[in-house]
Amino acid sequence: MTYGGNTSCVEVLLDGEVALVLDAGTGIRALGLDLVRRGVREIHLFLTHLHLDHLEGLRFFAPLWDPDVTVEVWGPRSPVLSLRERILRGFSPPLFPIDFRDVPARITFHDLPAEPWPTNGVSLSSDLVLHPGPTVGFRLAAGGSSVAYLPDHEPALAGIEGRSPDWVSGGALAAGVDVLLHDAQYLDDEYGSRIGWGHSSVDDAVAYRRAVGAERLVLFHHEPERSDRGLELLQDRARELSGGDGLAPELAREGMLIDVA
Amino acid sequence: MELQRQKHLVLILAREFASNLSTPTLLTDADGNLVFYNEAAESVLGRRFSEVEETGLDDWLAGFEARTLDSQPVPPDQRPGRVALDQRRPSHLRYLTTSVDGVEREIEVTAFPLFAHTDEFVGVVVIFWRD
Image (cartoon, rainbow over all chains, first blue to last red):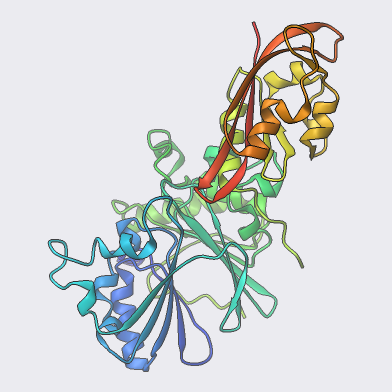
């Protein structure tokens, strides 16, 4: 498998001994082992939402089992239950043998603030975006560079083109970023029967990139059934649609390193 | 560079919802700024939405005289949009109004507040019902 099979997890590599992690899909298991190896003791985990493919790796995140580790978990507010209550549902029997109170690491939960805030040299912004249930996207900016992370996003439901950016879901987060990691799960002919599921077609991902003026589009949230060859055909389609706009779109792949310095 | 903030997702969804309705519908944000009305509302309000800037609801209401069915003036703070905005509760009223075409019509107006969370008021929906 060239592009990997784990679900969403991205580390923002910074100087120093603090880790910033976006989402806790199954990819966080290998990352956790790496953080242990690197001796990282302070981790900030930012969750776009709590669907299982963005959370199921947390229980297998090795740093949680070290009492000297601090984990700050940030996520979207829910109209009903707190972030802590929602996460703990999956962290107790019968879904998991160990109760959360027995996890040794020091873990605290925070609702994401409404305004941008600085953390470890990075300015972080979040905003609610179109996806079923409370879901956010993130924008990270530092030293004149910026990245937007919108892994699960269906902006076409409320329109992408022909409206001002403040009326486009995630439009402010993604405006003019150097790198846009964006949902492109479906081919256009697949999307028609999946409207409202919360994910984008590759055509819409390219249109969105054009609407927000992002320089580089990284195609994210691959359809699990798609082969490497199928993914490459999807990438070909994105490049064909992009024409000469910005850098050629590319598929996200496991272990991919994106330098935005 | 200061980035322009996105409208609240609830407003974005409300706009998309309204834009697909044949019922005249108007949206304000939490500050009472008129941020959208649909094509059906253009015939009530007399102007295309694309021709107007975001403006305060009161400025708009001032352009539409409202009278009770026995021809008494309806104070601005008793009009449904204003009630939903100020008191954050739904409101409904049948009244007489003179539209931009100069014709007096009986109209019913329903307004209700939008809350993203119980403590997060994001705007108001105003719906105009005509025969």
